[in-house]
Image (cartoon, rainbow, N blue to C red; front, side, top):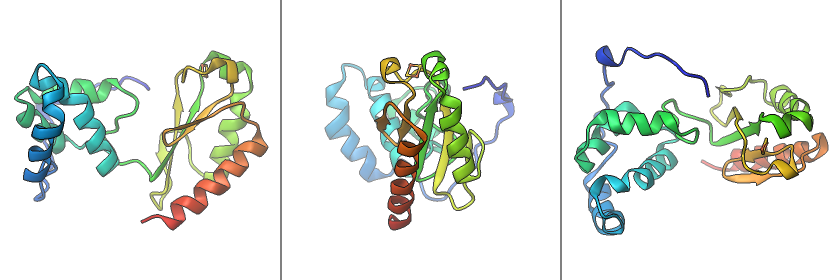
Length: 181
Ligand code: FES
């Protein structure tokens, strides 16, 4: 992930008429998530995961609403969202493919894997296909250097990749994503 300087002081939060944190969310989080943590803001990570999963990104308005729920400043939520690679502020595709580009994968020809995904999907890293089905990411070490090259398809890690293996995974992902709503 690269660093971006953002005009935070003047950023306007686009408003949606539908809240991201509904009364139902707040009630369930209060009974199911908050009791697991000694302090209220300890629940930030599981809540962010849930919102990311539900909306395929965490918009600014959601961060403001989550902050209000947890009684913390919105900047604390933004700091957390921007720190972790798995959270996105822009909507990602139904299937997110993350190709590891760190050293072990790099020496095991990760470029061949990355180029194959780029060619098959017609997108560059950190882009989403026009139909909203796929997002391609390059990622730092995924913790499986001994089985390089590796890539994530959603939350599933695929190891010892070859172009043939990748093609089969892409075929399967295309079929799955096309069949989902
Ligand atoms: S460098 Fe790719 S998994 Fe560690």
